[in-house]
Image (cartoon, rainbow, N blue to C red; front, side):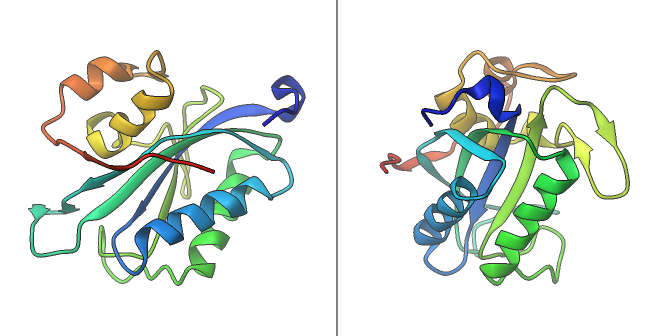
Length: 174
């Protein structure tokens, strides 16, 4: 984190989530793995927040709760290369994609990348549902209270409009 950010590439915001296994250990491991990946400099990591599982039909109180966090990085990778790194970390932690919004050991999503707005078959930037997800907005607001979601506005305003209430689980410590 002491390296010059300007020479470390573009800023990106990454959301992390887990509701299976040792959730906290998995998320901490993923942050560590990202921090040792070439071309990525970790700037900040939010506290861990716990939220009820969200499924396509709404909140599922019978499913294990999620731990969520957000991290900011600077990267010299392009967006698709960063996505490949995230997918590799998910696979290393036994991520299974059996059902849409299903329970998972880990979920890593690019929320923003250098202010880009793009859409293709593998990546949409900014993340298409981040603006309505308190489990993304609350931890992001903690580390970047003045951040804006491209095309949507200030995250503080977006967070105030959500219906969820993430619960602080634990502060991040390195």
